[in-house]
Amino acid sequence: MNKTAFLFPGQGSQAVGMGKSFVEHSQTAARMLEAASDALKVDMAYLLFEQNDMLEQTKYTQPAILLVSMMAYRLFAEKIGEAPAFALGHSLGEFSALAGVGAMDWLEAVKLVHLRGELMQKACEGVDAGMMVVLGVADEDVEAICQEARDNGKKVWPANYNAEGQIVIAGIKSDLAELEAPLKAAKARRVMLLNMSVASHCPLLESAVAPLTEALEGVLKDNFSAPVISNVTAKAYNTKAEALELLGKQLVMPVLYKQSIAGNDDLVDRYIEFGHGSVLKGLNRRATKKPTLNVNDYDSLNAVVEQIAGEEA
Image 1 (cartoon, one colour):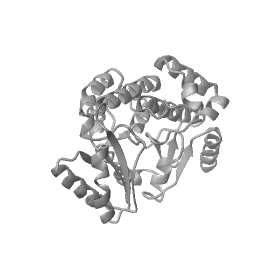
Image 2 (spheres, rainbow, N blue to C red):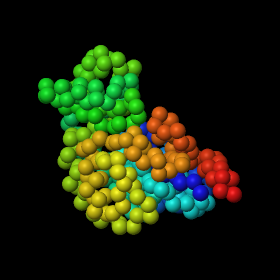
Image 3 (cartoon, rainbow, N blue to C red):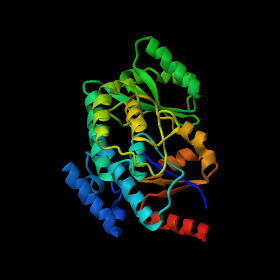
């Protein structure tokens, strides 16, 4: 039997209409949508399926993405009760991963990441925070450019190590803008500010660590059906105590996604990404030769289930 890793995307994967085919074809997904709406006092059908400006606000983006990932995962689990070799999420996706392996209830996770989004927005109030993607520059060169800028009083930090030649920097937007020239001098193929009003995975979020950790205490369980790979260390953990420590740090430390794939790739034969889009599948093309399947709507769910059933027949 093939060994599989379960993957869960983070912010940036959202789009109007995500999750709609799950709700249209599954009572399970429809009930999940209703439960999330009741828990957050937010019309999640409107948030997910209608044009609106809420979906780009972090406090709504995070529960929306997690909900759709959990729909995809739950419907898959109804058809194939396969436990993963490990679960891995990108940023917000680490919370989806924890819900997927039973370390927290999915609905508690929806409420928790809504709070996480609120805390992140509050931490960045009054600060023109943002994030910038850089393509085609080696990690060590980006790190050196950021360090020199910080030595000169700027607030910029590497935030997401996504793939070879793709890194995201977080900080103050005006300080990020000043990095464009040295990055282009370092032969960057592209330098682009992202449409974000928070600076994730950097010290600007320090004020959110304590309240998030306090909320986690009441939600996390020592009930891991499989290990989760930490964004902070790129290594596996499987206890509540470890999760409490690591998820607080995750707010202010970079996401080691490509390191997580590289360090754990030999444990699996394939990956399955649960949630809208195929962001992680795209990153994996540059990180592993093993296949990444997608469960992002009802048709792809059936295709993945059929493929796995055929392999194991």
